[in-house]
Image (cartoon, rainbow, N blue to C red; front, side):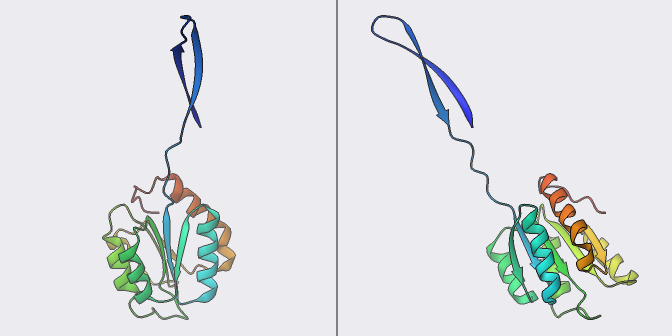
Length: 159
C-alpha cells in the first residue's frame, strides 16, 4: 500500500506532517477457460490454473464453453481435443473462435502423433500445443499457467 505524505499548517504556523493512505489499484482477476470432455483432465487443468492464480471457468462441452466465452473476457484457455482418441463435437470450432480473441493465450491439448492437428493448431496461432497430456504432467501444466500469468496476458508467443 502506498503512503502519500502531506503537510498542513496549524494556526501557529508550524508544519504538521499527516499521512494519507492511498488505496492500491484494484486488479481484476485474470480468467481462464478450461474445456474438456474428460472429467480427469478438466480437474487437473482447472487445478493447475487455479493454483497459478487464474479465476477458472470449467466446461465439459463446446456449447457451454462458447457461451461462457461470450459472457466473459478470458485471457487464457485450455481446450482438450483428445477424448478417448476422438475430438468432441464443436471443440475445433471453439478453438477457432478463441484464437480470434485479442490477447488470448490459447493452449490446445491434442492427440499423440497427430501432425495434421498440430499444423492446424499452429496455423490458428495457439500459444501452446501439447499432445497427449495426462495427470502425470500436472506439475508442468501448473508451471505453464504461472508463466502465462507473468506474460501479462498480452503475448502470443508459441511454444
